[in-house]
Image (tube, rainbow, N blue to C red; front, side):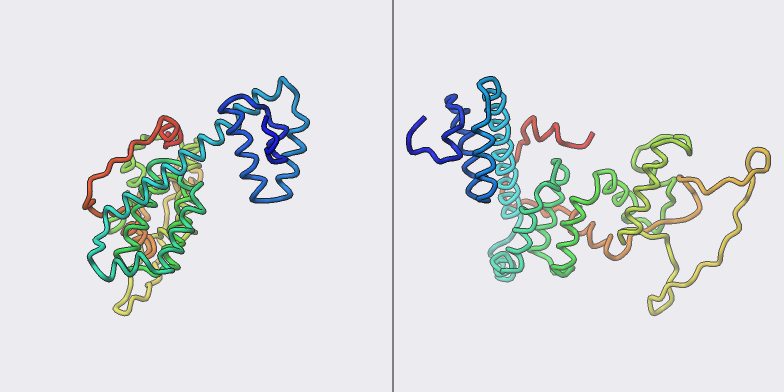
Length: 283
């Protein structure tokens, strides 16, 4: 080891490139938070000979993960810029504005929410449309970015199934996303009810409601439900109910416009996810 190594790196094992990567990782962490630097130095000093190889391997994987994340971010920025007409003065001014740069910073700061290629594409679409469209305010766009981390790919499939319909039942949504029949007391049924509840309480979807001329919602007349079933017992509403119809809220419709509408690329660019990226994708 060289004499001019930092305190964090002096106790690190010198195992070629891997050792250098490990020392560099500690220096980065230590430089960001002084307390953490001292803590990591103390830990490094306590490593035994047998532990050093395992620690080196961990840091090698960590550095590789950071490199892959940077690759994803770089690809996303290139894909966004390839879809924007920067000859348009309004779009060019928007891209350079502090407001849009704030959205980009928030997106990259919250990048952990983009744990799959599908979500990365949704984020790319949101930023592309935020640069070229003023349909939603930046406050709403920030919430859309939060939704990428909050909801799963299955949530987004449900949103897509409801989009562009005049109302669709829970049973209809289930079939539209390609699911088969399951028992009411199954884990799949419980998961589906949770998805619908998440999106309903999150203001993304709602049960279909009639409105008057001024857009006011009209109260529904309660419908009597049958109480049939074996032995005349009362049966609760199915998770895959065919009566109540669901639709997107206005927020939900704007989310589809921003996240699920892809601008045509003006310049050809193809990002190829690595094997690690594919492994993190949806099951």
